[in-house]
Image (cartoon, rainbow, N blue to C red; front, side, top):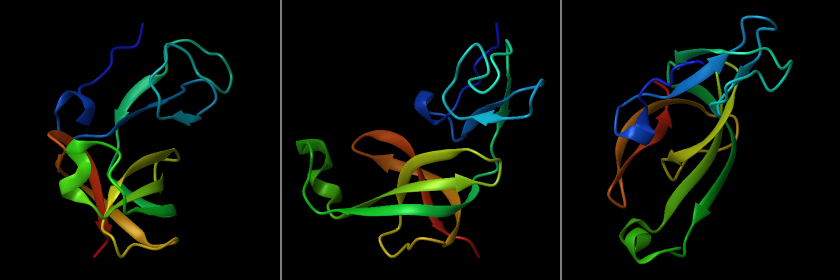
Length: 119
């Protein structure tokens, strides 16, 4: 079975994904098989943190008391250069098509990927 590398969900400043050795497809959600072709044990890799904004949504109403201090905050869908799409936080001025790079910051007491315009 493929070993899961530590990432931001475990408090480490990293985004990890999987790549299939059989078909070459990438997947963000960790599985013991390739979701595209069914091959076992895709390889876990570390993402570069670079990507492009696919969608953006500015949250102006806190979902929980813990997030109230962060309002307004931006939730993004980012197409990574590695080929998978992920949801993350980002600067409020980001727009669809912007090139972005990840850094990591605290949000409601948890470490999260946070995207800003690439320089």
